[in-house]
Length: 303
Ligand SMILES: [Zn+2]
Ligand SMILES: [Zn+2]
Image (cartoon, rainbow, N blue to C red; front, side, top):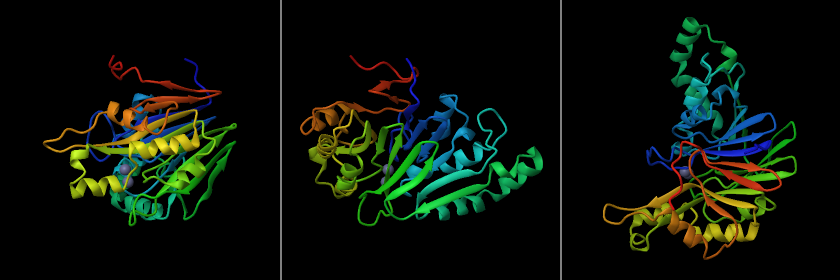
């Protein structure tokens, strides 16, 4: 399979559930010679290691919002990426771009890990330049990064009344576009910034109807997009490929969660175009068309 110069790999398609199959939210975007992470949930470094991509090769860490499942891998990417071994090797500052709050997160991590940094500088003689941080915050829609033909545009989404700030990203490179919804309810801004997307990566959440009477289920679903609603977003934006990540499948002790087949079937009530349910390490090559590649470590799809 040929690899295009614009490639998206889902490193973590999960949610707060500590699942070995779906790691915490994290997406790798490779455009030309640059590599970006959008969020860094639990296990982000493990997935980079599986791709044989040194953590220190990441040019910019983008953040969408400050729910811990999206950031708990940040200290690991930052600190492990600094180590001298082949999987680390960062010599330049860890660059972070995120909505207001990024600086507070990173400055507090610097305080939390000050002793480790002091020890490794004294013991391993690691360069301080590789553990330094460079944070850029934003507080409105617009271009938040532009370099070597890559443009990244942040757009506000609606993850609930108090879960603010929360932003999605639109990445443009070489006349092609990949859009990432972040965590959001059905939101017009995703449709606006999703216009003309080759690849639209969207979150999704579903619970069986029997569970919808439970208050805690209602609260979770109210922060996310149902498959029917996501289908409506896809139908209005008409991407070359729509992909699900951050797949919230809610069950209880008595009632099993919906399956991937269930959410695809429900999406089909509002959208008939190209759709794939993401899985960890699934990659999308964005060329004239968008191709899907499963990682060899994943089991073959069920017949
Ligand atoms: Zn989330
Ligand atoms: Zn969230």
